[in-house]
Length: 259
Image 1: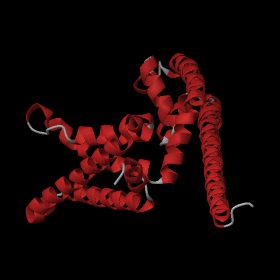
Image 2: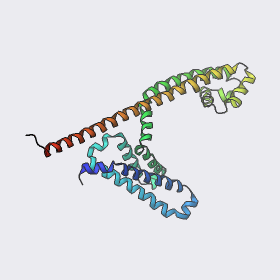
Image 3: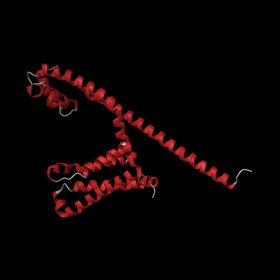
Image 4: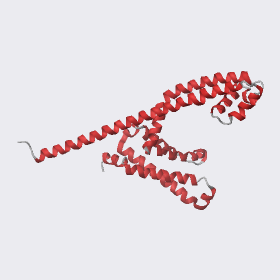
């Protein structure tokens, strides 16, 4: 089998479905391996299945390296798969025992196999430049708010707002809407009745405005990635159709040569 045919075979839908099935099995095995009862009952079987899944990954990467050569590393997803499999091959004994927990990273290979998951990750990566600006704005808002909260409420509520760090952590809790009303706002309002204005404005700006900006950036980037993928698929389909038409035309000319 030529390298081109091997590359086409390893990238086929059947091969992807098989690898995805192996990933699912590997995920179940690694989950069961965390149970002492399961390890006591079928521990050797789980270890054997885990090694078999790893062997499949290694063989797949080896075939791709042979089929694509150095072109294999031009794809970020191939580099992602190669890195995860390489980490899985690091010995987990002795000083590297802590790497044993990294075996679960193999499950992340499902991202590179499932197209919908790939679009989500590509959307997140595309949104990073815009998200950096939004996070910078968020940091400015947090810093200003933490300084204000420390000066306003630090004297009476030192546990929450006694220092700049404590104020920032408390404000982060408030932004997540985790127990902010009964846990923080209402006790503060018993001493400072007007404190509700500070907390309401802070939540409106952070939890609703800035966070929604991040969501909008991610959604827009995902739509752009999906649009580019659709255009690429359309171009590929058009080229395939034109190639088939050219082949048919060539055969017709061979059957009925011009006089």
